[in-house]
Image 1: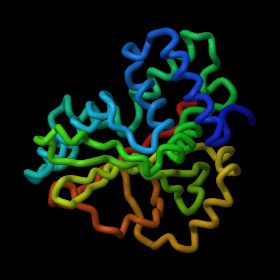
Image 2 (image 1 turned 90 degrees about the vertical axis):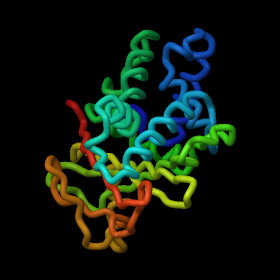
Image 3 (image 1 turned 120 degrees about the horizontal axis):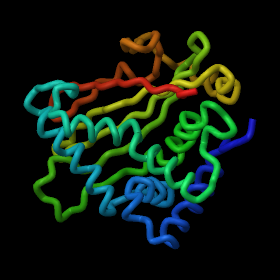
Image 4 (image 1 turned 180 degrees about the vertical axis):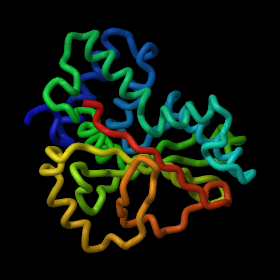
Length: 241
């Protein structure tokens, strides 16, 4: 099928884009693309944009400690959290930068180009934390870590995977914000072995979302805390073509 198909290709692409951004002095113009390039190249990240991202999660944590739900956050803050956790800012800047440099977009070769790429990207940055700098003593959180998990089975004509952003606060508590993405069945063949391998240990607890069928993930029964109160948030994305 072609296109970006391996984690090593993701690293190669992001490294090349990072060099172009520096050569063109475009890092400030493409702030989130630069951030995501840097994330690929580091085992942990504490840079300027990483702090900006962490500040949004910190603000959300402060609100959620009062007992409100994630969807009741102030509109601007909710927009920022959605844009970061769904990687919408990343997608927009990546697409724009590729086009500006006469490079093919992710959907040029395969219609599920973005969600396929995002799955591979998530595996590359998995467990590479964004860490709050020690001089930010007012912050309530310490770090945010991304984890990727594949659903245990193909549902109808699509396969699902979950990207979880785990927020760890200074009190030793943590909470998850996760986004569920889905791809058409022709992508499922690339992942079928992982699906079968995960089937054995996946428990029976299912996630229900208004736009998604029942999908089982292995860790949904593990209690999580966000600012002292169990919180979960799920959104669903899919290939646009």
